[in-house]
Length: 120
Image (cartoon, rainbow, N blue to C red; front, side, top):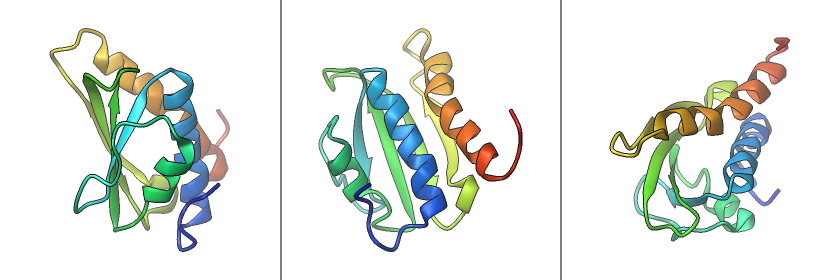
């Protein structure tokens, strides 16, 4: 993983699962670092990881494979450990986007539960 050296390893595992799920589903991510867009729409894992955790929070915007339509947003609050995924939302005008965003976040939530010692 190529996250910044200061990043919490527990958060890195959870966010890595999140990135994997999003990219494996064929979507792109644009990283907002709390101050500016730190990346364009990309499927480059190393670029996404590099731009994550530059500030106290990171926002992943999720788009279709062409980067033409934003599907939803995931907010990460760094320093919260297994609760790093703070919130997510979806573009209500896209049918099925709520279920899609829930499905994209769920594996990272299961990863967090496992790190907390919960059985699924």
